[in-house]
Amino acid sequence: MTERLNFVHILNKESLGGAESLVKSLVDYDQSNTHNILYIANNKLSKRALSVSRFRQLIIFFSVIRLVKEIVLAAYFKKQKIYIFHLAECHLLFYIIQYIIPLKKIQSIFICYIHQSPKLYPDKLLKFTKSWSKKSDGIIFYSKVVEDSWSPYLTKIQSTSRNVIHNFVSNVYIKKPRNKEGLNSLNSLEIVFVGRFVSWKRPEKAAQIASQIAHKGVKVNLNYIGIPGAKSSSFKKYLSEENLNLVFHGLVTNGVDLLNKMDLMVYPVDQDLCIEGVGIAAMEALVLGVPVVISNKNSTDFFELNSVIDFRELENAIKLYDKDKFIHYISQLKMQANQNINIAKHNFSIGNYINNLVQVALSIREYKKI
Image (cartoon, rainbow, N blue to C red; front, side, top):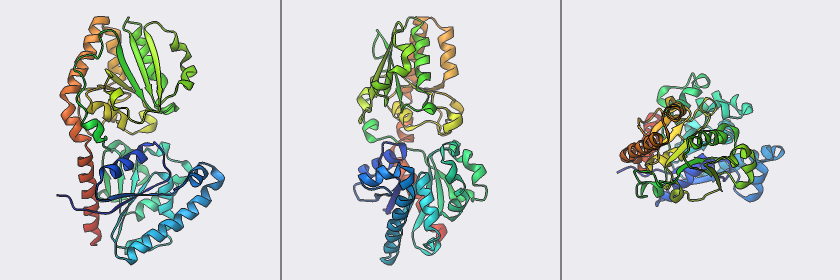
């Protein structure tokens, strides 16, 4: 049985981003208040101000006061907590408070969580990296490839202080009955892209691939989850193509039923820039038995699944196979994805994630002798 610890997750705002979704899922899953959230911007005014540059310093200033009060009071009442600082502005917050409070003398644990590559990290905040990373009790990375991308900035950090804990998917996806082994429809191929309309997500690459498949005479429905119909003009060249139908679903709060109807997920994130490996959306697809196509299979550092292929492999299949053989090829991918469901569910379960997080906290506590 895992020991009950008190985690406080510091986030810079409420949003639907990966870090925020991760922590909210932890809080929703937790029935014993083991995980709590402390927002830098904790009301509508400050959330809006945080996105306006001239108010950032003011928000950070009040956030520092709030967090110092929280840490000092916990220390006074001898409450041991594990503070986890998510994302760049929270790392800056930690950088500031380590000059105000003698953190090494406090019986709590301070961890910085890195979810993204340094290429997506604000340039102005990178210069503080060496300071906050050395003062923290430990660093958690989203994936091994993210850890490797940060190595030039963290050369003096002991390897024992660096930990990789891969994200998890919601139990809503874990408990969902498996996807059909064959194609969901004999009349069309259901393809899905999940993500915002930002350049490094490369949503146009999904349309390009779907178009190539449609040119073979295969009817394709390309479903964009996270992109509203208002952005359809950006895909103008594909909107009138024969055999290709683009569907813009916009923001979907619970996409499990929609994702479960898909035959294939395309995940064309620019790994040279993002360097995240397989993101949560792709993990959700894999636990439902939906095969995933990613831009660089070498970036998947934490599991080996035959249902994960890269775009080069898919594009070769499009060139080599006729319509019937290509449909059979996708059917085989779906069969492999279904065979890999149990592996994916174990790797991406919230229970597995929590166990890893607790072990990191306990090892730091033992090292600090607290």
